[in-house]
Image (cartoon, rainbow, N blue to C red; front, side):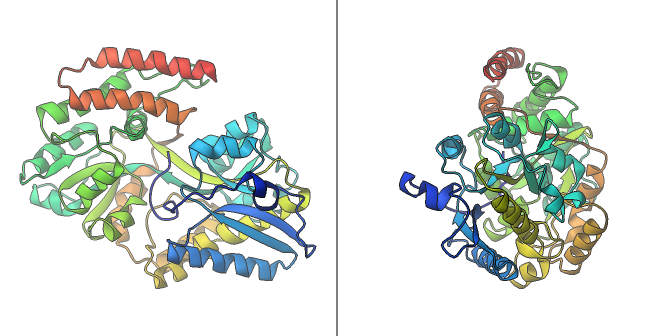
Length: 449
């Protein structure tokens, strides 16, 4: 599941027609009329995202100036990858030469034989050895490298410091266990006037996504290590559902309106009527810029439970038809755009600050060593958000098990949506039966491959 914030919220998917498949989308030999190596790339911000679009175009222009033998043709898209059309574009030869993927796509794209093997070329990617090893491993299948990580996120707990103070809670000591979270939620809901202590998603696959994160936080999993069996019908799974049930029905700290999705919860938090919810750091600027929140009031803590958290993210893979020249040009483009500390579309924090984009959010570190030190130095120098509000998140994440989403994530989330929504809408929901039924359905999904 993607998070929804800075660098992730772009507007209208551009799907190339079959008539343009060779010249505009897929690899068409890689040589433009001028004799340059031409590469098509996706995930360019649309015109409606004016600032990001301008940055992206500026960076492509500077790349082409530094590499006059390369012609970059960019396609805008929202979402950057649409699950409904992704496989069809691959199979139909319409995918760009350098294309965006979620972390969870890597093995699938390799399994259906649609990815170029980058192993012989990766030594030409200047930044590759500086990227976190666990992120590189996501795009390494059977010892071969098929993709390059671009960004990552990890789930945490966003909370409203102002409501904590009003409820007699210490805003500098956010809950570290689910028991503490339940206690805090009840006190915040006790403020009345429609204030909720805690909210969670339970529709559009988002409930299953959060259930997975909550199971990870309890030290559990939703799928076995070999990817063959469901592991939701476990003490960790029951603990998650029992806690949600008790907050909803015993404490009434989650309110009566359920079947919420991310926009509903963001509206509640931005309006100052919600104490806590799970999210990645990139929700914070949305809460401020679109939902009426205040950076000073919004803080971030690690996942309660102290065991683990869900991580996600994205990167780029290469069309299996891409020529060696296109692969080399694409790797240079990735270095320039996304993988240079303190520069490019992702790292030019000074430019972001000048344009009132948030700098200093506690995003997971992409780099290691000297590259990480430079990235952090430039980010700190240009920070324009209250970084102390995120200290607990950064410190707490150091001891958590960082776990990627399960295979067949969206299908599994759809099953788990029904489990979470039942618990939040039916006081007499049979948790054991719900988990047993979900386990069987997930086993079926995994068996079909």
